Length: 205
Image 1 (cartoon, rainbow, N blue to C red):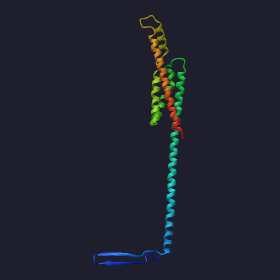
Image 2 (cartoon, rainbow, N blue to C red; image 1 turned 90 degrees about the vertical axis):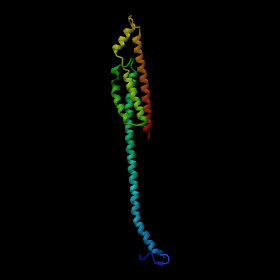
Image 3 (spheres, helix red, strand yellow; image 1 turned 135 degrees about the vertical axis):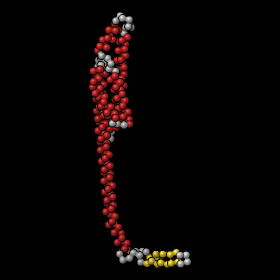
Image 4 (cartoon, helix red, strand yellow; image 1 turned 45 degrees about the vertical axis):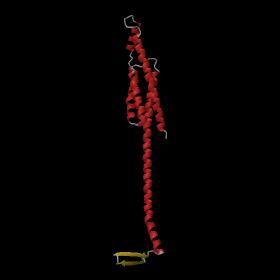
């Protein structure tokens, strides 16, 4: 490139101490313009390609991270669903007994209780509330197992004795405990069903 600016006229104005610079001809020749454009293209093309590559890499990284996070969340929901299923089956087994459930009958449910507590602590929001409700209901249901074979026999003897104790009083207490156990079981099943429904909704893509 020979010269881009071909003429500059400088005029000094002495009256007010100012200098006025006028550019008379600042137009470059067509050849100069072509050289500048070609040089700019050579510089900008690699830079543009680098920017595009960087954006594509960032987008791919975010998609992979989101996919992994989604997979992790879904695997956690699968574990919750499995535990709730086991609790559900165990409660149904207990309610199918032809007698009131005693302390030993709740052994499996006691083992499941800390597992439900654990998964409840790993989740937040609505699912945490649902699982926390299940934990409380499980504890209440397990706590209703206050009936032993000896208590059943004692209640029957008391209800048929001629002692001063009102007949049937002990048996009434026993019946009341059995009824409470049934209510606790029904409440627990309702909460489990609600939690299972929420888990299935959360697992949907």
